[in-house]
Image (cartoon, rainbow, N blue to C red):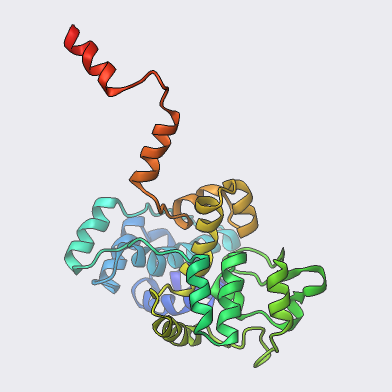
Length: 289
């Protein structure tokens, strides 16, 4: 089976389909059994020479592997596993393109949200409130229709995304009241048909508020993880379950952000330091020896 034939078996989402349009001219005629992992890794550099390694992974390696491994499920063709790009490879590519990848995100907070809502319209404000307190992704949020709301029972049905099935999630009373007073627009709860329509107005609201521009995903899902685990001390297992992460490790590795740094670490050591310990005592004993 060729790669092009395998693509026809794969039910690709829109984003993956667009990525595959660039991959097919390179791999389409090749037989799946002849496609080696190194060939897939190197294809990222050829198609996107100025992009980061993470972009290569997302736009080349992941969709290519998904097509090939789906063919394995359907037709028994060989599987493929492609190793991740190393830290050294990422650093080298960042130096070549003159830009750092994996920059630290600023997560949303209650203070940021309050300032944002003062200068946004009612739909933007409700959307930001919703994502921050549920951890919903922007793509899930804008897909919500009135049928997804069960406000009488303080819950909403989060649409399916990234391999996760749709799921009922409980919501705060304050959010219930806000959604109850938000008339649907364009058949959607938050009035947007595409997520790209959110960003320009979102940035304008930040500019009017005089606050840092924090994009929706960082303000919402990253804010949710950081607020619960870092600021409020909720155990990661509970936070991961509520935010619909497959494991606490993903939450801790990607969606929680340290905010106090060295000061909090030093304070923690001082709280645990026994009374009998002092620098003066240790120094005098060493000098006595």
